Length: 128
Length: 242
Image (cartoon, rainbow over all chains, first blue to last red; front, side, top):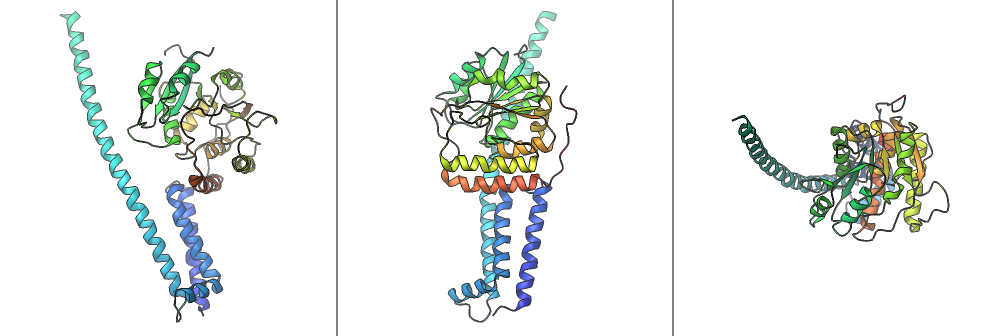
């Protein structure tokens, strides 16, 4: 059986995670899009911590006989891996977009210089 | 362009088949109007065609999604000093002949934001599939509850905006699936919101951006955004527009 203290610690930790994530979204430091996976993590950990029967059953399924809370660690680890993978994908996209932006700015600057020098040479004609 | 009174903001992604007609129809209305098409990195000729039909085209360097694209238009309106803006989809589902009706409450000084709603009066011709109708209705309920004013169609992208509306959305507009959350942001910022009955056409070309697979993300994201928005503080535009 899962020790009661372990369940309580799990509940407290997952509620804290949920509150922190919600507050970060409220303060606009985290976008909804990137909060969803964290919220899912928090909710699942909360359910598994609070619902001790379910945790024991799952522990039985995956062959963890001695210490069911180990399943909590496994689930948490799995979700952390998912979040990291998600970030790697987002980071790759951001890298591409960043390069694209830099290139567009370089092209725009060159075009602006051409337009400006064309405009200034036009201005000199009527004066001379 | 200098004489235009209203700026039409038209986000478009791969709408080459119809964008020309959309731009022409907007420019053919009685309203003195300039059209800006925000091309969200289309892979077809959307930008060229829109330009050829007399629109100003803002081409985004990569796809930023509908919210980011539309907000580019609001920022452009603010930069150009526009006091009136309308927003129509680039797929032709919003009928430009409804524009005077949409602009009227703002011109009378009674509204900062006008939403073209499909459900103000019952018996409008628009009958979406059941699941979609249910979603639209649930969002409308939640927004009405949290925003303190009854709204009937929070997923409509057919809008007219006065100066306060333009200013608010230029600085604060959600990036993906923006319409529902934007309605709540407007209400919580004390914009005066008026709804006007409009009919929408069936889309003729292109594909709706909301597929079944994305629906779940859509619902969860919007619900989270609504919940969190109702916990935020917003700048208030009290006293209405000039």
